[in-house]
Length: 185
Image (cartoon, rainbow, N blue to C red):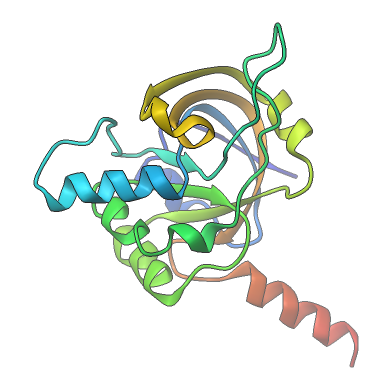
């Protein structure tokens, strides 16, 4: 059974999530990929304000395809998360509570997730059309020149996710592998 989570993703909601939980996420989230992350961290290092407020927010690592007529967005599947690893701890320090992507995260990100009380979700890879059906509205709000990598504000309903790394640092990729190996003994 999936847990229904509504944005914003507060510290209390993060604490209720455990590695391996299925989640249906509803509410406003942001999109950003490599180039947008670099710009955000460059602003922080320059002591400037970010174009988005990150407190209790979630960033979806996605570069959607152009929308077909009558749809808010094109295909919207997750991209590989480790490409954002060098930028993620700085954004978590700004209050970011969740990231959505696919694949492994580095130790520095896992440490930052534990320190900041955040969570890492995996989205369904290879099901970008299904993920797009959960997007009810999409609006570019920063870095339009980056095209697919611009920062967008999405409103999603029941976006299906799995908690991979919870606020205690439990990693479902490791837990799931161990559980599978036990079945082989």
